Length: 337
Image (tube, rainbow, N blue to C red; front, side, top):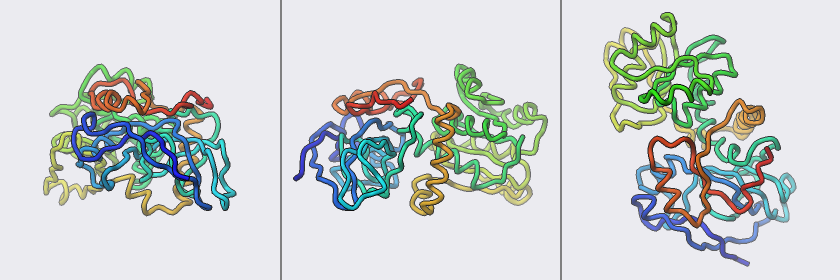
């Protein structure tokens, strides 16, 4: 029998705090190959806001429930499900719309979360840390001691890059725009933190002793991305995963011809769509291990119930926050830390 649960729903695209509201929607009992999951925590990512605004490549049918990631607890399993069990914490699948109290998903689309990981940290593992993990491994073969460049280093992906690089034996040059962010990045393990500016390539050369750098990660675009590639060694690769400046990439002919630089893009949603289940499982196992050890963590500024959708979305849209904003379920306090 269908039942009613609360969810964040938007009926039209627009400013998230204005068009997304907490409403009641129907949910059903799980089919033989499904499980019903209850929300514990789900972050508000920039991509979620872009989906509501209608500015993201993925557009759910309207009315839609946003939320690209999160963690829940299994409440019930279908008659044919043996690999999952009630009471198990799981990562919620992409495309489900995680900002809802409860819902039904395929049993093979969720991943069990081991004990020793706080619920809020588990809720944030599947997008930003996964993006960092894949970019550090899929484009350039890095050796211990190698340097990596990145702008937007204070972003969720940027902080994950710093933390993963630290435990992997790689060194990071982290480019930011505000001096007050330096201490936090250093605490995360950043080797070098620089303020962006016209002299950035010279700053990078001085800070690294003129090291040959083969990988740069770009979430800004425009002049900031150009300054990163100007600091790359011949044959180096710039991976773009965001465009915070809303400015296009500038690709000088000379860098292509004489430096033979590579310009690549990365989107974790596309990776999940094409990756083998074994590859996804292997990556998540590594991220779980890092989260359990405390080596991988993201700051949380505030949790909101689904009923406070407008306040949560307005808060998430603010700049200069100290951490992520998350929606929480009634049992989000079960951290398993």
